[in-house]
Length: 557
Image 1: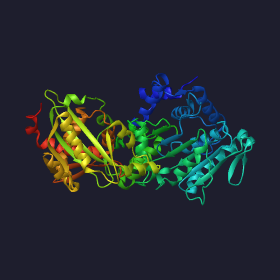
Image 2: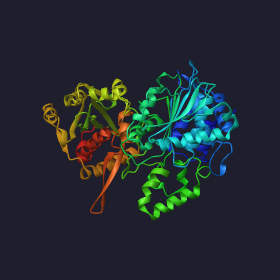
Image 3: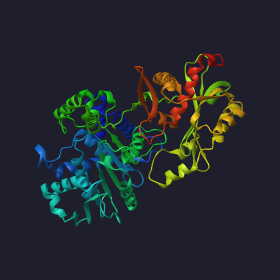
Image 4: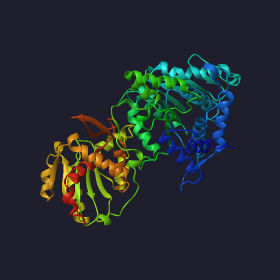
């Protein structure tokens, strides 16, 4: 019996299959759990159950277009691995599926639609569900109809599927289980009374809001093992549904602390480095099945066109390489940002420090930072505390937004929830005072954003802290930001594996400007709805670190 996820991981590790970092991390984790599950792990992997769904697709579903028309579907290795993962993981007690949401972001023309139509037939007839409601959904009816039409075509070409189902005016109906496959879009007049067991959401990059997704997810609440199947390329609609969910899915893919969501399978095929878009060796990172499903010749022609015509480059990067259309590039790589080394706070107690703070405007995240060095130790130790108003937590809980696990971080001690609708700056003061009184960690200087300081600076000065204005911008940040990146790349920044800071670092992009032919850099959000407050607070402290380095080294103890 073949374990396709293991076979796929072997191919990835040998270099036979080239994938994105996020996909590699997902398969390393999933396969690792099969052989060495964590203590108390509530799931088991049933190879036979996963294979049953692969066998159904390859036996009963046929292609309807191009040179493969009327031929049985033969799934690629990456598709077999995906399907066996989705249907093979089961809960030990209930035997129900583990995954409730599958997210597959890959380049255009990589077989998403045909695979999804086949999966819909499988879930419709082969999932042992009574009264299954299977919906092909999208932002617009024409888009939703593409996969539904593929389902209709598969029925036409398969005598077995045709024998037990009926094509009605608006759906495909199965008298045996009283279920149907139907087309639905966000511009449909009414979506009341839905009870979907499965829905596919096609090209969700075009959605400006989460309304369609929310209705379908809410409609699944009565199903024992519902499944949402989301497929898309990247797109040009910024700050819409795609951007609001992409950050969460990325954090689940890399299993960031606080984002351990066992119900989501995020498969994000994308170019690892924007700068490699001209290198054919990297194209499969965003295009699984390249050369077998998607034509290598076509992608080569598109790349050559983008070289000649700069106006076509955004389309190539967005649709073929799955990168957002943005002038900004990521600041730190994943490997640079992640440092799981920890330290006991007693090690840095009785020390002098340099502080930094990024204050929020009303309801956003605020962060206080302390940098500490110790004698004969080249590392830089970071302590942080985050602050957020209760109203922000309440808003997130009332909506489907999954910005970040703030409540969990508060329970773990990384974050303070302030009463009311805005951050109480006195809570920030109290944290700095606590560090002095309980641990004897005394900041010699604290760099702060002068734009939002309000009453906070006089309050801090009243406790004896020396406050320094930080004119946030490229002229102030350029050199400290470069030095900070070098320290991260050498893994000399030890931040106690703080999940909030790691999240902020991975949300941070680099904006470059030219001044007298010199490149100046500053941090920006990689997307407007992401938080970088912890990275900015750390950078403000680093400004003080660079400015006072010679003086500070005399106080290291």
